[in-house]
Length: 155
Picture 1 (cartoon, rainbow, N blue to C red):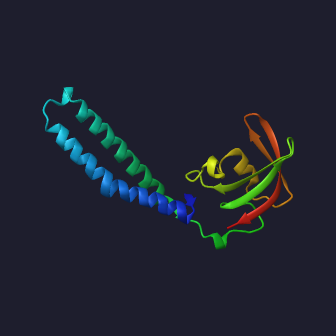
Picture 2: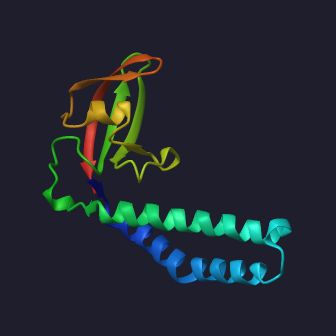
Picture 3: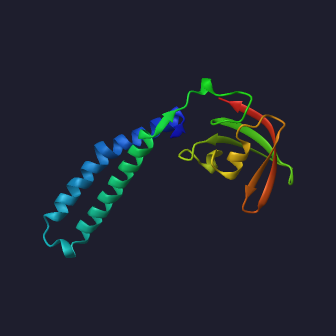
C-alpha cells in the first residue's frame, strides 16, 4: 500500500486517462496503418509503432497498479509535532553545519529538484517519527549523517 498526496494522485490519474483516451488509440491506429504497408519483417515503421505500443501499454499497467494500491492521505489526520508523510522538515547536518529543507513524500512523488525526498530514502527513513530538536542518524553510502531537526511544518 502506497500513500499519495491528493495532488500526486490526481496527476497520475490524469496521465493514465490521457494515455488510455488519447495516446493508446493513436498508437493502435499507427500499428494498423504500418502493418497494412506490407512485409512486417522489413518494415521499420511497423517495428517502431509496436515498440511505442508496448511502452504505452507498460506505462498504463504501471499507473493502474500504483493507483489501485494507493490511498490518498488526509493531511488533517497527520500529526503536527512529528515528522510524517507530507511534512516539510528543516534540519541541520551536524558534521557540516549545513541546513537543508525537504518535504517527506512517497517514493512515487520523490523529486529532489522540487525538494521532495522519499520516506524510504536513508534520510527520509531516519527523520520519520522524530520531533523538533531530536537528532536522527541516517546511514548513507558515504557514512553516517547526524541530523538535528530544526522545524516541522505541514501544509
